[in-house]
Image (cartoon, rainbow, N blue to C red; front, side, top):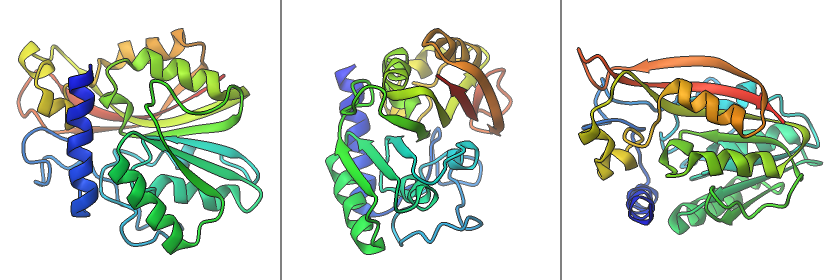
Length: 244
């Protein structure tokens, strides 16, 4: 597990320093067949340059039901793109917390917050399997293509449940698999850092969320990716919500 986390940190530290990303995917993820990046151009987000590094697989804020005054938590907040979208939604009376385990990403996010003059956000260094957030303190949890990178996804969803207020909800975009993904791919640590090897079967993913205590678990959007052409297995992104 520690080797996986180190490889993930290494990959995303490099992206933060190089100021560019290309989503998730097997092989050349910047190719037309491989990109899972998300275009935020159509959103009224007023994003500062460099906040969107092209690392998402959905737009969880579209389904999050964020309201003015809410406290929002973003898991694996990266350079801050979804934090800043949420910050506009919660307004001056709300607050958004981004948690990321890569110091280089945190530095970039703080710099973007200063450039964008976001006064209702903060970024914390932390592991999403052990969140630096108080119990029952969050109205909405969001995350974008990050939980698949965590070795212990059950622990992540247990932490989400712990931090949410009663009645609180999450809206998460993530990568899942279908079919019999070969063991060689499952054990490829570089593909894990590319959001492929660590992704679990969709039905298993939904079940572990329910087992964490969430209700009304619903998939709002599914996008299929052509990473493994003509294979009986593959990966998709789902944007999913649930309620504590």
